[in-house]
Length: 538
Ligand code: PEP
Ligand code: MG
Image (cartoon, rainbow, N blue to C red; front, side):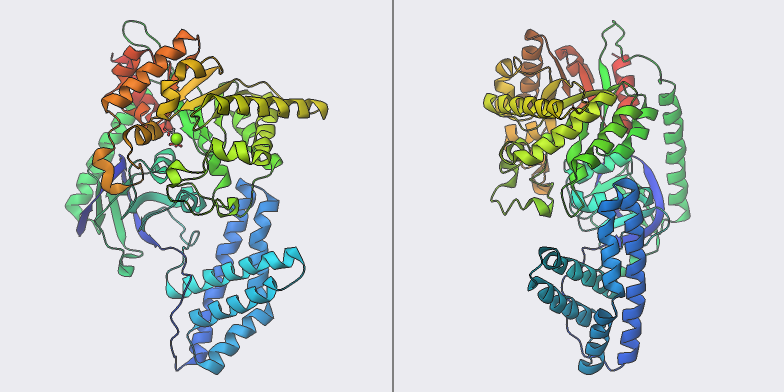
């Protein structure tokens, strides 16, 4: 047995086989081999495994997103099955006596160059695909591939770190827990882990040894502990904690259907945060009053190209109709900083958190913004939608966003398309927005305070930087004062103000928020009843 400690992102216990996630290998060392036939055998085996992964990815994408988007994986499978491509790899292994991973990457590069020199734009673009396929096979050969779908039961995923887009590509039903060597408790990967309701540790002092693969592991999210091959005594200890958690869960479930009301009769709305349509199920079972934050940007991550209007419309409509008239606040695209999608081609930045992100992209690349607004407004006809703009710092930004929304409505009306009305609100997550919240309140129907970014920008502490976590203090007086001030300004203007950052779920502050007059707290579904309990105990 081996115990390692990290920082817990979500309390809970998990056990399962360990799977090591490594980034897809882009390079392979050239090695001389003396048994080319065996090497060709390795290549063929890896090819079959890659094909299985691609077939699974096709199915998953088709189910979750759509057939058109899933087609890319069919194209990859066709490339992999191509006789010429396979012969090139085999010939190289035979003639040059090189290892299979090297041969497959060299073949991939040669084909990519050939595609790149073609006239036809479609064929040109296939260069990246053949490279991608080759990397997948090389990754399997060297054991460094991210074998997304190669595990059949929920695993304890051990990784150096995970980006939000890598997390999105994982099959959520196959993850029992995350154990990351890097990462920070305030990162979007941590937020996703909470939304998935799986125990997760960041900054864990563990090694990523290949020999751990497939062995038994456990995570104690209460203690922030990862255990390799837990012994009997530890297993018993974990089982006791599971029993206690089940009991606590039962106690919390008794609160379902009850009001979020303090003993002196003050009521507060408790809503849930989601990152995908799949999360609605846990929102409904959490008994939340609605969705206070739908992080729509996750729709854009872990894929090769922009989601179409139709695709987005289907997702939003699905969420809205499944929520059956309960409010759903859809935040418009908050891409950039740590949430990167290659096809946006945002470019390298010195300070990504202070850079080209969120509303700044929407107001300058209006075609992306308009596509999303069209999809949301059309879906709004199927439920109770709100639209929220992220990262607002100035009055002109919200005025411009409103103007574009009006334009989109006019266009939809002119086309004779059905659409619904949706109140417009903003995130208060820059100190500037909190300071001018009296002015901003005149422009919108609601505020939702994003304490994750508000803390980052108020204290000038990068929320991603693990060495600065001690300085990232969301309880800092400056942050609390800005929250208080925002709520006060909202009420003066007759609009409501909620909190949707992670701080909303911090029950040590529930009373403070109620005292401030906060109208809504939006938390991950797993925290809804805990916060209800905290409110009712005031
Ligand atoms: C926030 O900043 O508090 C917030 C809710 O948005 P995100 O965490 O997605 O940046
Ligand atoms: Mg934010």
